[in-house]
Length: 206
Length: 206
Image (cartoon, rainbow over all chains, first blue to last red):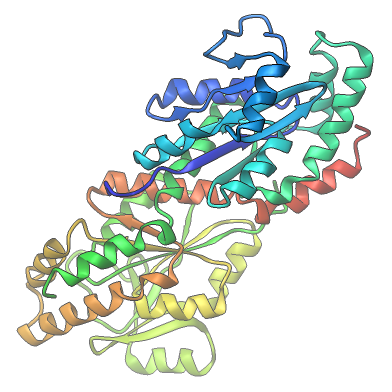
C-alpha cells in the first residue's frame, strides 16, 4: 500500500562475520533497497571507495557531526569512529522506501534506542571456530588488535538478545535469501498494515 | 539446527478469499511442509477427496471427537462442523517439522488459545468488492447462505488483529511467495534460536 512508511533494517553482527560481503550481495539482488552509507575515521581497506563503502572522514569532522546531532548512532571501535548520518535515513523512510544499515553491534544498540521500530538482524558465523579463523586471518592488523577483536566478538554475540532475527552466514546466497525473506515478511506484519485494510472495510457494503 | 521444534503455521481468512487454492499451491512448491487435514461434516465439493482435502465425517463422529478432546479447535460454520485433530499436530511439531493449518477464522482463534506460539497468517482479498463477488458467484449455495457468508466475512476481517501477518491474495504466486518468506523468516526469529547459538559460545575459546 502506497501510504506505508519504509522500514529500517539493521544488519549487524560480530567483527569478521562477513557483514559487508552479505550486504553487497543483497544490494546486487535488490537495487530498490536504499543503503545508508556510514561515516568512518578508519583507513580504507583495499578496494573500498569513499562515498560508496563509507564516507571516510577525519576524527575532527566526525566529532563535529556528533556535536551537531547529525548521527543516529556512532561508535568508537578499535580506535576509530563509525556513524550513520541521520537526515538521509529519516527522509528515505518518509518516502516509503526501506533503508538498510550495515553497522557494528555497539551502533546497532544505539539505533534501537532511537528507532525501536527498526528490524534488527544479527549475522551469525557458521561456527565460532570459523569466526575465530576469519578474525585471525584478516591479516591487516597486528596481534593486539586481533586479540581485541576476538574479545569484542564474544561480547557482541552475547548481545544477540537485542535483535529480532538471527541469520547464519553459512553461505552468502542462503544468507541473502533469508534476509530477503525477512524484508518481505516484515512488510506483511499485521501491526504495520492492518489499519489500512480495516479502513477499506468502511467503504464497502458487505 | 536439528533440535529445533517445528513451527505451527495457521493460514486463515474470510470465506471466499481463496485459502484452499493458496494452500494447495504452497504445498506443490514445498512438499516438506506437513499439512494437517481437517475433519468436516460438510459435503465434499466437486473434486474434493476424503483423506486429502478433508476427512469427511458425520456430525455424530465429530461430536464424539470433541467429547474426547481430540480436536485442537473446532467450529460450527454455516451449519457444519470443522475441526483439527490434535495428535498429528503435536507429534509432527515434536519431530521438528512445520505444520500448516488452513482453517476458518473461528477455528484459528481457538488454536491461538491452545498454541499461542503459532504463527497466524490472515489471507486478505485484493479488494473487498472482489471478495463480495467471489462469495456471490460461488454458486453452490442459496441466497440466505450467501447473505450469511457476506456477514461472516465482514466479522472475520474485523478479527484480523489476532493475527501476526496479513497476506494479500492479489495473485496466487505472489501470495505463496509471501507465505514462504514468512515461513523462512520465522525460522530466523531470535527468540526461537538464540539459546542454541549462545550454548555454542561456551564450547569455544574466543
